[in-house]
Image (tube, rainbow, N blue to C red):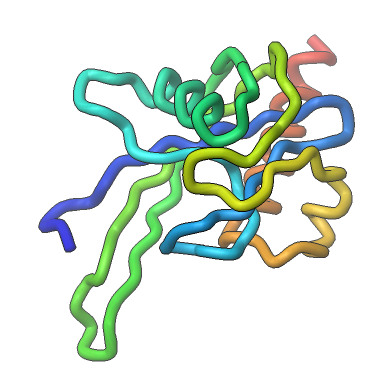
Length: 145
């Protein structure tokens, strides 16, 4: 346990009607589907961390576009003491190249239909569906301007 929140970045990559998801190997959320991501290194921007973690976990290259949202993930034990606290910053990224391949600390990596994510057809981390919809809305707004 840390005495402060840990900052992490999530890479949200949408290509066509699909979003890139990974199935986590390690806690928190081991076995659940979510966005590639991980810790932000000292002196590293959230956008750079999202692109780096995406590459490390999936082999996919993307260019960070903009932040989507920030999520507080706080887990407490039975007595109410904080077990862990992560601040996850979701970053919309534009796919550049690569076929998703599970690497680093993920079991699987795949392009998943956005409709499947929104319908909750995979066991997923909290807010994966909401973040996917927010990313799609950003892309729709950009394409209509």
